[in-house]
Length: 86
Length: 114
Image (cartoon, rainbow over all chains, first blue to last red):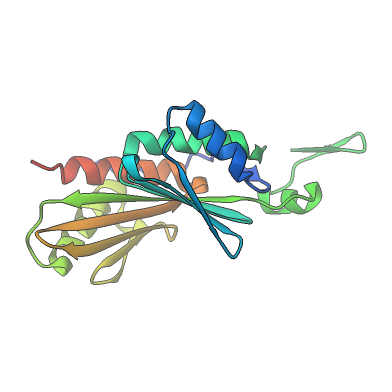
């Protein structure tokens, strides 16, 4: 058996609110230009239909739902750029 | 590690949030993995349970019910019937990135399509 449990700590701890306009702009800079933004009761849903990705943003949390592992890491890095972190 | 008023202290992450006066922002990821498995969902849940127990250690993996597993009490795996195949949803937070991406690799390589 090759038992091993990753116990690496996260590289950083993100904080603060996400600026949706800033995020959409950074997505476009990364070539993801088909972002569709909807807002309902302060919750933003960004759909990248071509990439099979939905990003759900509320005050203190962001949820990335995706079927594309490669893009997930790129999106994660873009999100971390938008947030403060330590 | 916090530097404040010319002193340096080591505090836990949760305490640091209060000291810094900022709210943490939770990042959660859910990956959808479509798989060519035709058996009933409980059978797939059970074989995934066995596989992950071998890879990570049995104490790390819990069966929540017949279609859901949890790993280290923080990463969740849901198996859905999605005729003709199945869909596995793997969900974790940024703090569990190492474990989450490892599980994603294991599940992807185990249930590679075609």
